[in-house]
Image 1 (cartoon, rainbow, N blue to C red):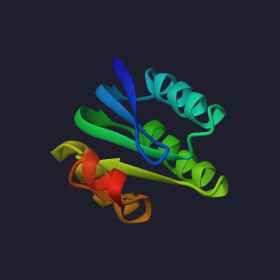
Image 2 (cartoon, one colour; image 1 turned 135 degrees about the vertical axis):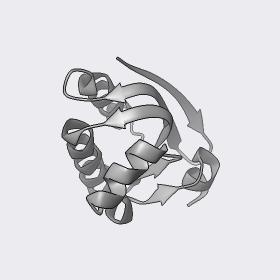
Image 3 (cartoon, rainbow, N blue to C red; image 1 turned 45 degrees about the vertical axis):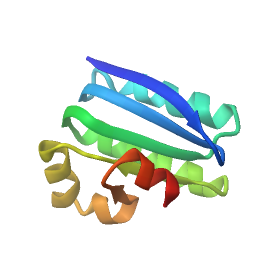
Length: 111
C-alpha cells in the first residue's frame, strides 16, 4: 500500500510525501497526485521518499513520465531522501542521475 500526502511550498513547489511501497498495485495513487498537481498548474514537483521501502519498474516509469511532463510544462521533477533499497534501484538503473536526487525535500525544493 502507498500513502501520498501533499503540501505546497513557496515558489509553486508541491511536495508529494510518500510512505509504503511503490509497485504495480499502488502506483495509481502517485499517478493521481501527479495528475492533480499538473491540473492545478503545479509543474515543480518534489517526491519525498524517506519512508518508501520498495519501488518497482512501475514507480520508476511513473517518475520518468512525471519528469518529462513537468519539463514540458516548464517545470521540474525531483526526488528527495530515497531509502537504501530505493536508492539502490535508482543507482542501478542510472535514473538517479537523470531525475535528480536530493538529500531532503528542502534541498530538492531549493534546487
